[in-house]
Length: 347
Image 1 (cartoon, rainbow, N blue to C red):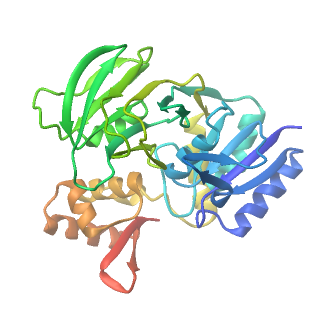
Image 2 (cartoon, rainbow, N blue to C red):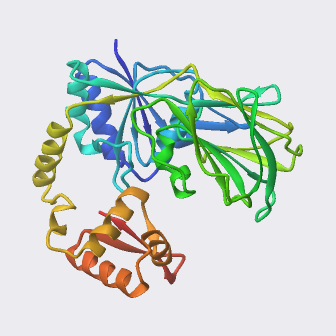
């Protein structure tokens, strides 16, 4: 029997959603096991599932839960499909939770391709950390402090650096943290990106190198720095050298006919009397569309975060938010009874 694992983020699915998913899979004669985010355990810098088995994994929620799931399945290549839930959308999601039955039918019929993405591993001393899909980031344990290290590629020294930190990213991660630190976007090539974060040496620009290379970050002071894996694992570096290399396990995402799914989303939206959120954006100024896209990709943000990420003047952001609120495509939620800390999110 085919087995589906459903990994979901708190608040992204209702009890009714989960009952409908389980009932549908039962009718399809497909095994089903539900894994709330709390079942992904973190211990001593490792992420793992207890009693996990599945032929396919459906992750419902934000990109954070996708990354966390992959860390928990570090030594596995079980295919994953990502759906967005009731509160947020991520880069990996191809459709919403309401599309689950039709997505599964496509998978069972074999109407999919596998999008294989490389992952990278870090060895700290004798410990091998879980494979990262996006990036490994090395920073000082003490906030606001710089780090000193020597970068080697295949044993050859590249530079000695003094900076806020260093990021080593995959092509998938090149559009995430590494990009925000000034790195390039890498597409259609198996390569690693190395980005020095706010280096004090102006000639230290981002490096793109083959994923066949082995990267060493050496001359670190033991126990003064941390390594962060995909933003989910934070571990003190108790060694003077970190070895980074391509994992033998890839992340495999199921891709199905996107056009059909988008059409399906439209039909489902009409069925429940809800318009697709981006349709009312027609005719709005570019500033409003930019603010909407930022909320779509990054999830709920407050006003100051939107100003920072958009680069728009505060008055322009306020105008865009008012337009989007009036159109009913975003909502405002008050945080901790402080109106100044209200967050905005798409419906």
